[in-house]
Image (cartoon, rainbow, N blue to C red; front, side, top):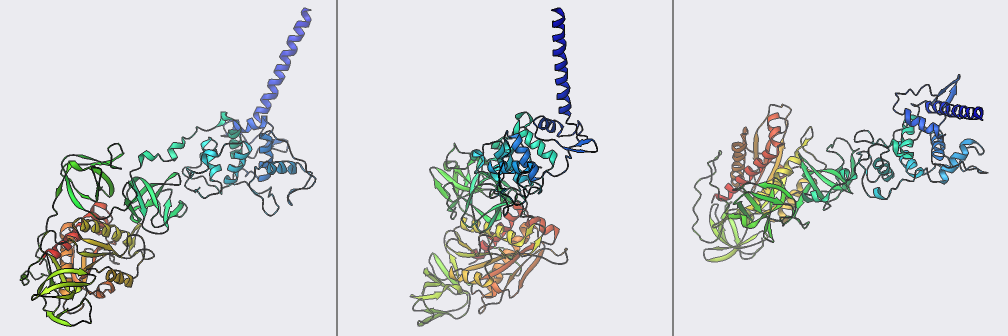
Length: 639
């Protein structure tokens, strides 16, 4: 009996030792090309134990060939076995390139039957074609029954897998399940998969033991409580990108047309961080305009106020909403509207709401008239008529007619510099009182002068940001003339509107109105002065400075052009310490074809380092705009 027990114990130990030896042999995999320090060593051996992979025997040695690309045929066998399924025996192959009755046929037929592969090509399976990473995401998701429901309507965390990619939900699924992490910001969907890589992915999909640390979906999916504003696109086809890089189209995830709205999470230089189809993305801020909390355009500035204390600026007209920024006491701010005790204002380009009773209204200062060079006439004939609005004739022999048209009877004529009382304006015709009689004068030849309040109130001013759309103008590096002029022009508009002017822009986005379109736009909107903004360039990079042009137009109207050009040019030169290249006559199309005072200002040379640094800086853009605004103010302040 004792001997029997001893024999039994020895037998058990022998069997146990034998099992351990067999397991160890299997765990090594026997692959001479997969050393223990290989990144996929454990995963490959795990799959060997499951019978998923076997390798190749050559000259008495077994190889896994980890660096070879895994083929579609190999993948079919691996995932069918790994998912616990059996080959499917068929009498007739569904694929012209897979012979019926072969081992491959059974696995391919089963894999396709179970939906592991998305499509086939013209009746072929292409078993020898390397598997791509986008195909891999579909195979793994289907074979291991991973839940895609959470990831069907969100963009991927990778810049090269857009929301429109047919595999996006599968890529998302394997990413958020810890099966792949991509390569930096890229997934490389069209890249091929090596046998070692696929072993890693299959092991992770099969067993949570091998999963990567799971990413937190909220990191890639925006938190709507952090929205700081809402914008609408000012152009068609505005590119929405996954990164702040406009040098390539690979990161474009979609486009937005004019009026399309996006939530903004941050302003990062010239870019806005937005949410697009459930993920963070970027758009170029030049081609967007901010809206109020209700999604409406800001409209015109109604007044200006000064903060009486340090103030929070809120996303919405309530103190419970997100604080965008703060402003210091005594800060002057524009007010677009007042809602529920909050003023809608703009701070550093962002609209927001401030508590109204923590501000006080301020008067816009009436600017004094400088002594420019060339020197506008400092002593025009003083007004001899009264009224809230006067008109000073800018040409000789200006007809006064009985009706508001160019064919009615002429009842009088005005000399250059002569004043009339303006009773009303309809389109391009001003009803005036002259020598006690009412008549009509074409307002293009009257300088309209407010006699009370701000000199700019109700004046119709056309701002023309040069170039746009297909015509970028001067381009140096990533900076273009069309973007700079639009940025400065928009700021000028805001400042003029704050002073009570009616301002229209020939373009408000990245569009290309022709030169004649700009002239027609001005005429259709009854413009009273026209300011075209441009950026200069030269082959000689030492060329720098500001210059402003006028054109000789009807009669002796050009003196008004000279005055306007001088005021604007001198303001820019003095405020930004620019080299003064002067006021010059040049027959540029948009200014020579205007009947109203018109100028074209070249802010500086984009090809000069010093000028470039100023024109591409947001703070200097503000100064350029302020200078143009002050120059226009000075023009209208001169009676």
